[in-house]
Image 1 (cartoon, rainbow, N blue to C red):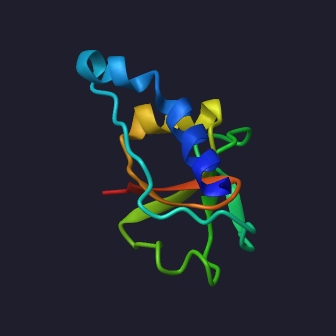
Image 2 (cartoon, rainbow, N blue to C red):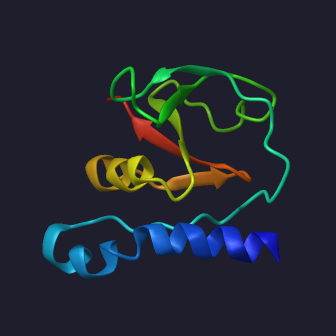
Image 3 (cartoon, rainbow, N blue to C red):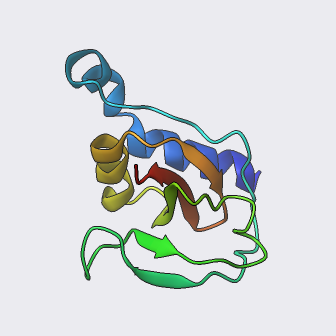
Length: 110
């Protein structure tokens, strides 16, 4: 049940992209894997696009080690937030995984 609610929140957060997809190239992605709870221990390095950004660059932990790539930044945004929606539109990055509170993106650096 919680997984269904979480996926619905993600979809409702990007629902505005459906129409924009045809007009502005908005990237709509859905997670293949979602972890309903609890949130794992995460190491937040800094705001991704600036100090006050809700989307955070994520460091290595037991949870994130499989998602890290030397040619990409791993970024976590609060699921359903405006920051998440704008990051998806700006970076066009796919969702790599999701926890109870965060959605993770791998954003190429090269």
